[in-house]
Length: 549
Image (tube, rainbow, N blue to C red):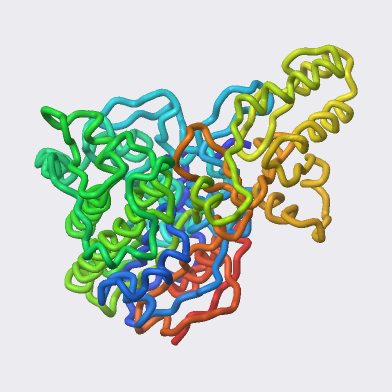
């Protein structure tokens, strides 16, 4: 059944808020935070937070580690660890098997057509061009979020998602919130017609000031002396991508360009200035929407995208990644202190996590004695199809790779009178011959109840049978799916991809201290719900972590 339209949901929320329960929405109470703030650092492994702890500012990430409650062994439960899947889990508490957000993009199992996780051709960006498959609404998100729960109970509440990426804004904002995302063609922040017919005056005013242009020709220089980076890999390695802003610091953003333009605005995200710009927009949202300052609870989600772009280009082991995290930490400190002054330190709760971790670059891993490599999709697909054609006499029985799997053409197999189970088994056999493949699970295994086979439970949580490919692939540790010769990525059930920060701050609400008990990011939504005095989203699979002081 298709999801109801946003207009219908808004009407339903108003009706429920007025008639469905005898108890009015929760009134202002010092026992409940007026603002829930979710901070997401895209692509931040927990090992970087603890590994550089001695170099953090006093009130950025250290606010959580020194004066907040934090979980040192927090992981994603699902196996295909990518941006959209992680962002969909955070405030729904549901794994991709329920959210339907199995990846950033996938192929329609029936047609093979590409699908983007927040794509919705019925809606367009406001005051900005809309590319095909652009993310414009949460239509594909099958579950409700904590923000949807809040707005259903309290229609006056506001839920705002902000990010450098469309999926980083849209998915945490849910169906009843409002998403604003960075436009890499223009350097503006915008929304889509799903949320509103026109941008608010404050957003237009922010864009009119051209804040992205203020960073043109600005230099990204190391924050600390050279000796401070001895624990990370030096700049200029052959496996570090040299396009964009280059692969050495200091780097001039917009170097060799005459004026700001689409290439500059895109490159800005892969620098500390991308975070600085996103947080400036978040400040404008807090100020102009009066978040947490109106006597009702609000939710603000801010997903900072730059660290992900940097780790993709240079690897998390690099000095560039190390230095970026230190710059980001200082930007977070300034933003937290702004919230203290604007909302009041005793009136809000902070949570910080990441959408996935990161693998070291394979070339660096090889120098450390690890078995590592790059799994290239195009030659792998060709090899599987050649083997299947030789065995069954039919060309292109495998459509393409889709999310974490290989999508087989079951319709073609049926048309040619082939036993699809035999085709699937043969494709699995061929995949297992490819370099870097650890294991391959069939649809039947993923729909079964085996909990003993390694990786199967995690891949099952990533498997929506209506959207996922029939065969799901797990690469060997330190192998990555790669479309270029340099850089790194994520996407596996291995610890370096699943282990992320799960940090809380709010002295009156969450207590303080490290907790080493294992936790999952799916626990975030029910935990924040308990702190806010709200029910957890109905499809949540996580648990309340019990953060009361």
